[in-house]
Length: 324
Image 1 (spheres, helix red, strand yellow):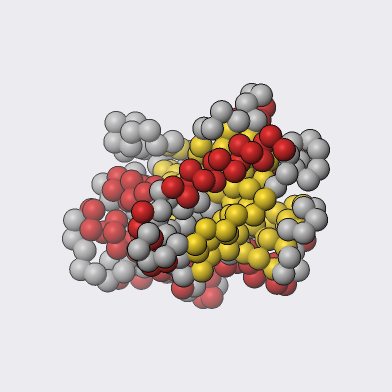
Image 2 (image 1 turned 90 degrees about the vertical axis):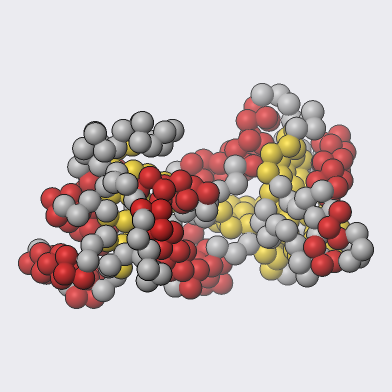
């Protein structure tokens, strides 16, 4: 997940000033989707992106002016095909960017609202920030309080305009929990991070889940059911079990089946999976729940090596996420 709001809040609290720029609408081809954000400090430092090339430069200049006058503004950038690639708007795309200085006086973005947004994101609570583009009134709406239309936006992870209101959806970051720090897990964790997932590795066997095998990756040596419970599984989480050991995989599977994870995949042959289903049925798991398991895990692309199997697994996770 973009961390522009968090960085903007850090700059603000450090006394450096901050503004947030957000893509609120696009037409044609645009390099960054609606909802993409760029944080700008009073010193001209930037974090994030709203497009590319000189568009960022123009947005930074407007953000610095907004910090001076305390007023938000909406910018429109459109280019012809001849200039498109020079500014990062391929094929003549057009974007609208909302620039909001953070400040205590209206109509600036309130520091309290920004802090509440950052706190919700840190707690993995989905919220929408609704900004009236005519009055600059803003409010946060938690997912449980959303109406049907807003709930659909959360489900689709889709920010965008709604009349004169811009709806910015802030879902928790996508997360992949890998149970079993085996060879496949090493490329899978690296690929998942590159694809925008926040990976977690769970394996009570310290020889497998070691810093040497997973440099820079947080590792849990708790028993899988305890580790998954501590992580707090939600609808933005995928779980993959890779150990081949029922003592480790089964507790993780049972815990994941009791949560609204969007994907649950299990490594093993068809024969291994049949035995797994027998054990889960004996544990009282209903057939409808068993149908949630993706096993043998991964898309059937003929993968053989650990890295190829990791590609197949991640591809199936993304397919499930995007196509339901």
